[in-house]
Amino acid sequence: MMKIGVFLILSMVVGSSIAHLFLEDKGYVFIHFLSYSVEMSVPFFFILLLISYCLLRILFNFISIPKKMMLSLDISKNKKSKKNLNLGVKNIYEGNWAKGENLISSSLQSEDKSLIKYMLLAKAANSQGLIDRRDEWFRLAYINLPSAISAISLTKAELQFANKDYEGALATLEKFRNNNINHPLALGLLAKTYNSLGDWDSLIKLMPDISNAQMDKEERVIIVNRALKKFGDRKNIKLESLDRVFNSLASSIKSDPKIISTYSLLLARLGNSIRAEKNISQAMKKNWNNDLIYSYGLIRTVSIDKQLRKSELWLAKKPDNALILLTCARFCIYLELWGKAKKYLELSLDIDGNAEAYKIYGRMLKEMGDIEGSAIAYDKGLKTYLKNKTL
Image 1 (cartoon, rainbow, N blue to C red):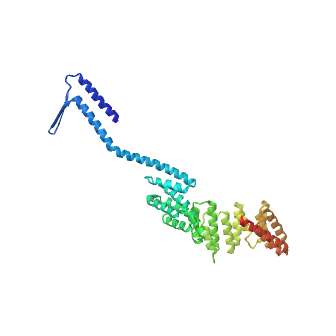
Image 2: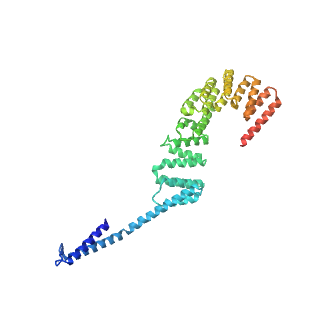
Image 3: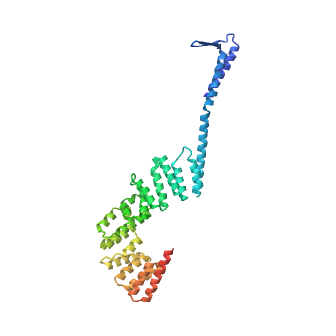
């Protein structure tokens, strides 16, 4: 638009000048302002107008030079900042922690102090073992990005947990949960932290909420199962208390074979073997599982013979399952059916010669008076145990 305006003015000046060359009366322009008067020809007026316009443009451009320089400098800084950020990220993910940290920290000089920069800087410092510097990056992130406190706190807790700084992770998570009590990721980290610290009382209290935690499903079951076992190890535990803890769990956790197995064994320990046996039998109808089979062999109801018959029905369906053979052997030993027990144990050991089966076999042979065979079985069991322990 500016160029068009200049073109129009030049056209008017040139056109009017040429036209007035052919006119006797070239006309004039009279300007009166206050007590001052100016009179000039029309061509001279347009030439003066053009000169005034050009002078104003020159003045305007001169005044705007610092602003343009600052804008150009900002653009240059932003380009350099982005370049350093990209190079920094590249170096961090290639394992060049120190170089990556230096590059990204230099990009913080621009106005763009984004969350990703602080998180990467904290990660880089943490990977170098520079814990104080890591925490300083987190502190600066809290100051400059107060709206991102959740992400900053969770990232800090994750790094602390990864460093096995469980006390530090716990402090960060507890502070975070003051305002975000049911945050899924925080729940998962808290459960893992309690588990690592061996804080079973706190973990047991958290059990009802663990189903909402953002964590690996298998890891969640392992942690809950461990907490349930620790609850069962408490002195003077009552059946009502056990049921209350178990029923507080989400259905997805209660239906897991590992949880059912642990719960059933605790029921049996508290004198409720009938319920324990029933729980495992019902679960086996829905889900054929070795944890359930193993636990079933440890339960003793008043009808061991019925348990043996049920186990032998399972064996008919799965004749090569070492755990079912071991379970059948346990019941046979209890019923003093030595011949059947020996056969089941030997078949089980042929399929899976584990240390526990050798121990049971050695004890049974001793009961049968085979001292030499018992010693051989114990020796094989010990060697198997030591071998597995070193793996």
